[in-house]
View 1 (cartoon, rainbow, N blue to C red):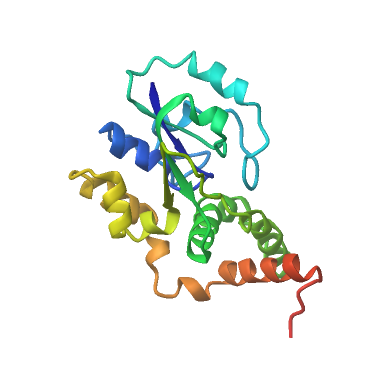
View 2: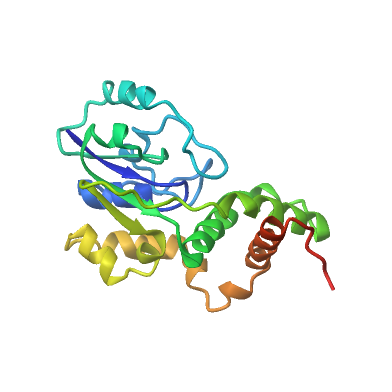
Length: 219
């Protein structure tokens, strides 16, 4: 049986596949830049959406498994939020969760910096603020923990901050080269001014509008 990493996009699925499979893939350029170009981190993907992928057919995922030729025990990844029916097809699963503010904002920051910002380079002023605020709403919904005996839930912020919880879950000694490269690619996450950036302000504006069901007003 394979092992599974279930993660929403831009939360280190490729990085963890590399660490756990003891591979060292090249960084990805072009589409989805800022990611690790791990083959394994794409093998379980049967779709995605702008927020959380929890509406899918488990049978499609099981069909995808039949086409995988990795050795038993390999770690593969998916964007599908795991159900019991899906989990029963794997030996172990790591679920990368985004239940805290830090995790959700780190995820939004990575998506914005690596994907949306290059796509919006010609958008300025209030048009840019509107785009950031509306798109950030997709990142308010958490990727929730899963209660299952074979699942380890790992918060995304623990990976970014390399917490003791992350080190314990990974249980690998040779991760320094992986993390040094990943931190370099994502150095903006460690900027002491991150929390005052305009795209982070737009995240809070998005939350304001969604929770209160009214437009954010600029004063």
